[in-house]
Image (cartoon, rainbow, N blue to C red; front, side, top):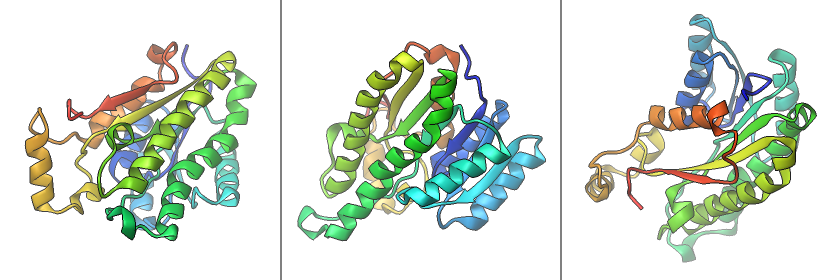
Length: 246
């Protein structure tokens, strides 16, 4: 059963995995809301690219950790595109610090964007899906949310919390025919991971059984599958896309 409303909100969509997802969904006939917080120019260019190719895309600046921003964004998406059938909670931040150096502000911001952001966006988008008894929610965790990573304890904890949210919400929404799944990417070739530095990246590549990093486009294809009718009996799952890294 395909989603009734082929409109998707993708948070953190101006670059990396989110950008690839926006392009992929647009090419498959979805209206796309491109959420961004600071990357205005990148979001504008992506929106123009999709629309110039015959797709439907709009952009909206919102901090997903702020409920008022999220409500305004969701209302805008409904006005411009229509009812929401798919939500991709992709917004996230990364930070490497020793555990004892993580500040309260660091921890709160990490949890705010990753966990509260998904909570806010899901609550805001859900009424359309419940009304139609049809919808797909895709949360973007990380392999570190599954296995944990030293020097990224708050990041790992936030991504693990997202997995817990996915499992519980999937059970609650199953009677409404809404599937909730989580993807756990490994090291993906994005600007965010490029900030790790060439030496660290080379070590990670050597540790990968496939000898390479994943691409944003590969992650986007998994998202499309989870948004399609092939995943109608898949819910509450965390699907790794890490090239057997863990």
